[in-house]
Length: 320
Image (cartoon, rainbow, N blue to C red; front, side, top):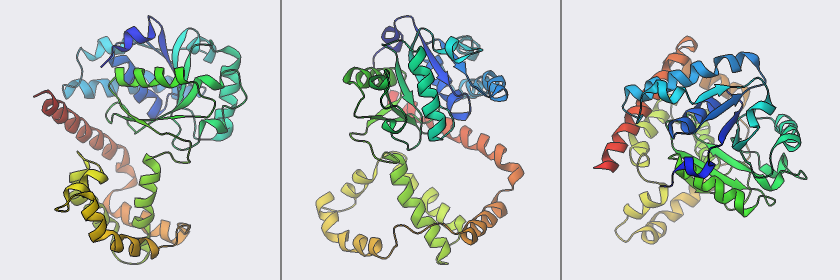
């Protein structure tokens, strides 16, 4: 793994958008030894950014996931009063603003007027291609998608998706930087809505909602199927390796044996059916029976603790 500090050569990383994802990114870069400057146009979000970073770092330290005291890492993070101050002199900018096309377009126009010619911009967008908000600009060759899984400080995957205008240099830099800060890089070879992660998740969610609507199973039993079934394997291997190991002759044998079943399942679904308001109310009601609205924040903290435990166990396994 390369040293990210050598890659940025004394410069800093700018985080634009300091919500859950942005603050998580700040942790990722700061714990790798980089200086991080943060800016958010929403004063309230900006005010809570350092507190959020501190809470995340404290949790990582508690689980043994930091190489140095949390206070030392936090000292490398600062908030700036303006976008211009945040990105001035940055080697890399991680954009994590609202998931709205107009917001991202407006920000890219601002960056076009201020950003240096060699800084690379990665967007945390969950599914909007970079060509939709960064085309026809001076900085277009410098922009690509760097989509994480939330929280990025605990789940290492990042999807890198170049636009047609993205330069090879920008993609190479982003790849080296993400690898250097400990992320697991997926290269998405062409622009497609939702990229890879959310397209896979979309198929699973479509079926989950449909099974509830059809009265096949409850929300809790569907969650249990993933949590206590598929998720056990998926926590350390992907779908292709899973099926490769699930037939005596490997993946081709599996495809011949079970391909007809999967084709019939796929053919049984309408692929463009919306989640109706009635169905949403049903799922919401079932979920609130399992977890009250007042307990959501506490449960998110529980989730992050479980993720940290998993990350620590994985680090120990890979280091043994």
